[in-house]
Image (tube, rainbow over all chains, first blue to last red):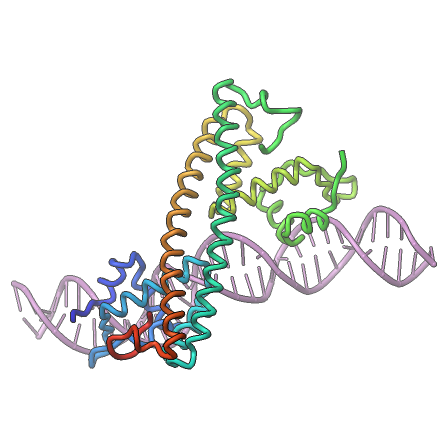
Amino acid sequence: MSTYSISEVAKELNLSVYTLRYYDKEGLMPFIERTESGTRLFKDSDIAALKIIECLKATGMPIKEIKHFIDWCTDGDSTLQNRFDMFMERKAIVNAQMEELKKTMEIIEHKCLYYQTALEAGTEDIHKTGKIEIS
Amino acid sequence: MSTYSISEVAKELNLSVYTLRYYDKEGLMPFIERTESGTRLFKDSDIAALKIIECLKATGMPIKEIKHFIDWCTDGDSTLQNRFDMFMERKAIVNAQMEELKKTMEIIEHKCLYYQTALEAGTEDIHKTGKIEIS
DNA sequence: GCTTGCCCTAGAGTTAACTCTAAGGGTTAC
DNA sequence: GTAACCCTTAGAGTTAACTCTAGGGCAAGC
């Protein structure tokens, strides 16, 4: 089982070394081992855990809440229900985000058409009713 | 054509009064009229413009970039190409965000199943290979 | 043995986007 | 006329998530 330095992990996960140390400082990485001299040794399972952390971050979860999850993980089976509930809640949140993004996309696409038509006409006036508007 | 106070607009758009004034301070609302005594008078077209601003924010666009767009709007037809290009770029960005969110959802759903199985078994061990892991 | 390049910590600094406070003005209700 | 409740500004404070600096350690190559 191979290990990786912090800069290798940073490159792999597209994070900065600073960010990884910040996560560690915030208690997101209680499982990372160290050499005698204090250098972090990342295992494959650590990289997998960091990918879950990145996934939770992508749902908009703040780092303090992610820490709760990490704490539950180290607390063992007594927290299984908490963790299940958390992922179900995240699922609902991501579903809502997807709906929001769809609505956003519709508006953006409408604007693309609006400006395409305006460009073809050479002026925005074909859409307009009067004075300057943000359309 | 009716007008609205800042607190009415805040309620309607689910923003705080502070946020609306902050947007104004940042130059996102050069089109808002005022009474003689300085009170902002929002028109329906202003609310529509704010909805576009919220839409751009939802794509992750920072306020300084949104200001560029607002400036282009007040600059008139000479900036039509800029605005078209901007919305096409936003469209690509939102598409990428949708892809990201799909990948995130897959991982989250996988975790929901993982914890459901673990809950039924009463222990996480059925998934595990050895010591404590963040799974 | 010394330079290079990685690693470490503590703690300060940065940035965006608010969020609030202080001090004050205008309008309506009694 | 005065209380209540809006509105205004300038500018300070907050928060999250980094991002960096200073000062130092260890290990390999010349």
